[in-house]
Length: 112
Length: 115
Image (tube, rainbow over all chains, first blue to last red; front, side):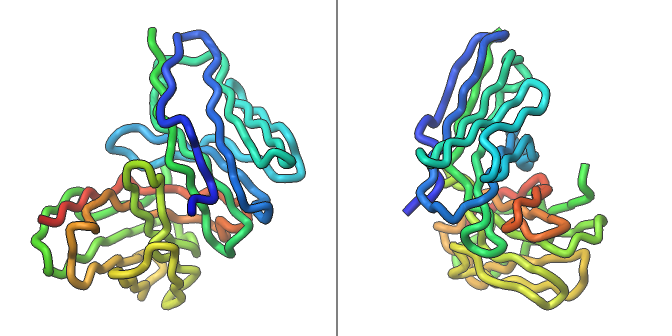
């Protein structure tokens, strides 16, 4: 039973437009949420995080929004650039000790 | 980049053979993790370590064992490899428990194929 779900396996967006990636979770005990970015043949790299006491966190072109009542978070990338083409993983922690629980990933393609 | 080295980067092995993957870090981080990545499943935790000789199971630990005799090295062993263990394996490290929201730094991965 997946506790963290990314229901869109892929997303295609034009350069300069906004990319919106979505993530849903089921465990209300999660209290930190993180986004990782992964290029082919490389390990995931940390992108941005948010604590459950906040509803928004912004870092440059990347903003994460958290809606606790809906158990939903989203990552906005504005403007999207070709270098943003990668797989993005949503992850959550706080419900199971030392464990990070990952979603299945969303592959983003930014077209020039 | 965090100093994490995984070896080997690629390996093909036969069903039933033992396989050991190595993760080496130069960051002196306390926590080390082994994940596997499979299509549709994201990354799933196999085992983790919170100190030398201190390890615990993750969500997909069956068929795997780990050892950590030094801070810098975390070994993952498949005692008798099966085709279901064909996957990409990632090692990760963190200064504090990722259960507290601390980010983890990942190695470049090991692609293992069991034939």
